[in-house]
Image (cartoon, rainbow, N blue to C red):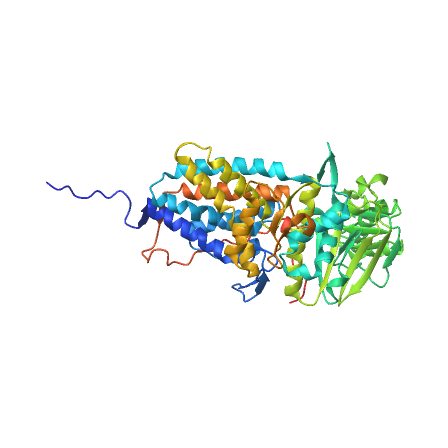
Length: 558
């Protein structure tokens, strides 16, 4: 007697399980890796992405490309998360992470075909990861952060892959200047560099790239409130930063005031004026030369200030205000009555308003020991500037990493080859079934040098064999590919370096992600409406702006 089939899942649910899922995930991740693959190395290609509003992004920053893509496959989506984490953690190696993960999954495919259990593969991978990090520790060399030429070489190799490599030294210089400016010692020899908060990149179209510079202070896109009356140039200004409006507060709800005599009207107005005059007097007690507030500034307050010869700037972004505070040593005050002498910033050497292009910019520069700075980028077009800014972001992250952890590894695929060789050696001492996936992981590391070789257009097989020969027993750790010519060279001489924590982070992220994707054996997708599976448009999340994003708003006129 046959039983009627039992329906557990609703009809509208689609379920894939078993090896089918593994294969699908591996295919998806490989597809993502292939999109990005050509952007690795100095001879990399650019990608041009058109977004929904018809704007274009031209870039080869792994993260920037993936950010723009709208993918349907869940596994591919998690790949994108990877490069984002990498970008936030260390700022560089976004492309390598993806390529490496793709490769790790690719080599795992063979084992899944042979019915290996995914957990076995994962275990082997994790073992390989531990050993790989150990190898990194062994070949890393420490570096003196104050040695300019080393730092330049380092930053240059990280942005050598980028579009701005023609202006390599320029961008590298900007990045190092900016990061060494804002570095703060937290004690125990550690340095904390907060790029997002204290380095502002201002893009001003026009001029040449060579005009870009790091200011010893801050600039922002504002003019003084009353241009005719207020000074536009002040040497050694005393700066007061406020976080409150200098205007009469309106009531929250409607208030009705009954005026009996007509003088009452004058009294009311007089009270408003006195209130503002009071505020201004409290501020003027400290003899500032420049008052900056994040909120509004009424005409009357403006009049009192300009009469006292004080320049004022209003409605400044909060983030900009923080930076000014850091640069000139002022404290942001919330109520004028709480002002103290110590809150006045005296660290700046010069305040002036300049006109660049057709916009006014206020500069607060020549600060003594500024802890915040602005990088002023000039360039021909908006797209160009955006790309330069992205590259600068990467370069600054690299400089930050070195300042935080001054250890170096060879670039040009040399590190990966060394790791690969050492792991191959070790694999012979591993018992049992885990030996094979372990060895495969070792081979997967070769994806990076191989991709480098492919992108320079040399004979890949020959180059790889030669390199493997050089690295055979884990010696010659510094031999790698010169990404420009594809020749096999010593990375020490070429000054092609990578930061230690970028590499370590890349390996960790890649292997952990590969394990995570391998462990998935079931995908259940509930499709609400009856429609062909996967055909529906994926709704994109609404973009929520956070305070950090308030900075990177484009102030360029379209």
